[in-house]
Image 1 (spheres, rainbow, N blue to C red):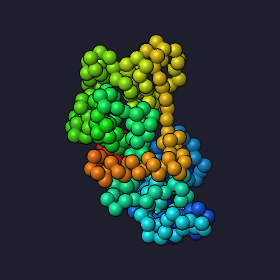
Image 2: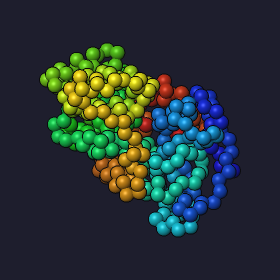
Image 3: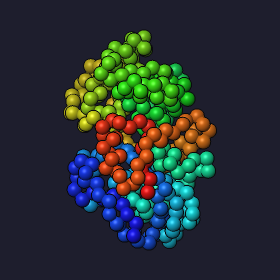
Image 4: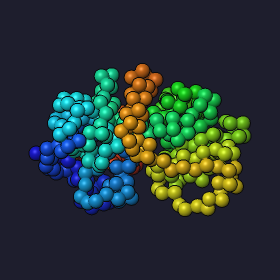
Length: 324
């Protein structure tokens, strides 16, 4: 019988258990898949901890690469043996096999291997909507991207540079700074060493950046606002350091008529047409070599506890995958 990581109570990484999980036949509009690699993302820790609620018990994980084992009634887009990937399906990726709605699956092109596919879907699609839709980055735009050496950051900074932006990234160590510089960042600032606001203003001639992409949350939110030029856009798309406390919206006026958004991948890729279009653009920039996907860490699927521990301790760079 296939096995999966299960969560019976919310909490720290120790609540992740490895156990058998029966999988039925696919119903109409579904496919049964066998995972070849599973992506690890911060949203998985939010589900595990209970920050984002899931009905208990559940199998975490929202991103994976797989092979189709069977399809349900009415499925014509996919066939047995197809290589597929997903990032917007219901939770359940930390498993050897599972059922997935077919409208959440996309075919993986020949130029992308399984580990890369599992590393790039959620993070790459996030980069796509951030740079191409939430704010459409244009040549010459100065932008600030926090956690530039993280999974989303490495993809987004390369992509932003490809689009012609001046990319300022923040990181937590010298090693991560070197990685960020090699992956699209024109300037790299270190948390705890650099005065980020002062350095951003200096690098932009005192004006500030057009947009800040902030997936860190509580620890960086206030400074991010201060890095923006008048009528700049604050994109708060994650909370690795904790939730942003409530604040008085008059601050947006006082700091220069700023804009603020809290987008999600599911808000942008919620339809089949949107998912296919976003995935096609992502695959195209990867296959062309314009963006390299960094899969820096891998763990056996059964060792998801170790993967979550490393992720939350900020000991990872780039993408992390679990291997069934």
